[in-house]
Image 1: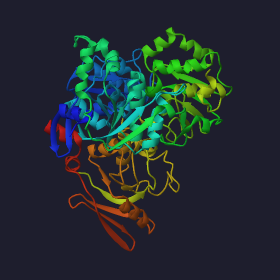
Image 2: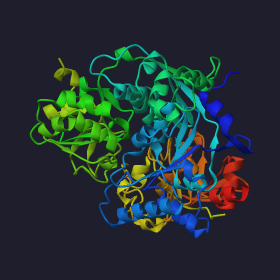
Image 3: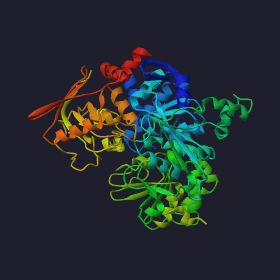
Image 4: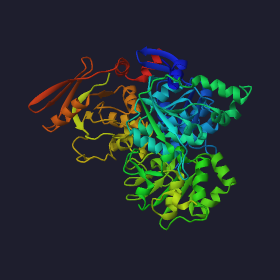
Length: 428
Length: 175
């Protein structure tokens, strides 16, 4: 029987099977941010075990609340900073160099096909776009990862999502993943890895694949993987060129991780992406998805463009194309947060920031910000946001606030009209 | 091993997420105890009162499918723990929440939908209490005038975590 990419990665990293079905894996990368790491650091210190398994395999950033907004968040940053200095963690990104972890770390080339990676953050699945087993974990798993470089998992089964066809104008990777989640439901991929397969995925850029993988957790997925190919190699080439004679050699090498043709899946979901329209969530679960045609007219108070889902340069370009020459509707606040300093600089160079500012948007620093209602655009009771983030849970962006998840183009279009809007109405 | 069992808090809804269990705005706290007042602050559930009599007395939570979905925040199990709730019983869990419970030496017990249905039905008879026997894998639900035993399964790794106090203890000895 053939193996899935996940089974191959598990086999290559198996350190121990202490009980049948419990696999302790060695870790290639352990990623840390300031919300979930400080309590792990404090606990290690309390136990007299203030050490790290491998300083080169740890990546750390302050991203969720930055710059520090109060004493509590300042302390969290300080704990991270002091810890990184104590252990010589050179890949620690502080003020001025920091960005949203799942956008920043890929930019730095930290993830490779076939890697195992954990972080104390549920959207760690984003890195599965590189063909890595990347999973979100809690602080205790992170603590053991930092101390021992291992993490325990049950072998997850896999769901195969086959994406064929060509995206219509105005339809993006975000619309695709929201459609997938609607079909799978929020519990449909629990204890399973989602494999995104098919020509439509092969046609996607790494940024688009990251948007897909980012929301695997919203269907309950342990991770969301894309098979590594020439697109993956192109993205990683600045970091791997020293290891391979040519890009072709790298593409061939990465094939060793590909799922076998006779690998077994719990289910297969086949979607023709050409039939997908721009969509939005309604209600408080990410699987509650309708077309924007159906949802048109719902009044909004805020537009938020950013996050680990859709804060990369291609996302800002798509939104700017809609925003250009317009102004946000009266009563609507527009916020754009480029996900990393490199995205910010690129957006500035391309004139995108000026487009947003001329339209009346606030340009925020790279941060998770309003995505989880901690800063940078928290909603008041009764307010509604058209957002490019990944969760519409009750109270997520602010107590009593309502979040509608959609693509950057859809959010931008909604900002122009002041109501939920299908972006195709504003496109030629 | 922690102690388990006591009065039951019934949360009759699927897909209760970790933002509802403990909102993100409290995640800047450096100590678990600071989370205590905020457990279930954002829970949207008809009949549930944030300030109800369960607060301070409940020791066991019973819920439906996909409990603890959403964010990986271990603050969610911690918020239960500092409120002396060390056992959750549900039809199913989000992977990260379930692992976080066992990693902290707590119980995330899974029961078949029919058994969960029965417990919610028993809850209509009056205030439920649940005794938990890890060794015999038995839950004993009692109310005025009756009691009922329910068996549960516990994977060997999960039992090892509960008995050793958690994953750090286990991994530190072994790896």
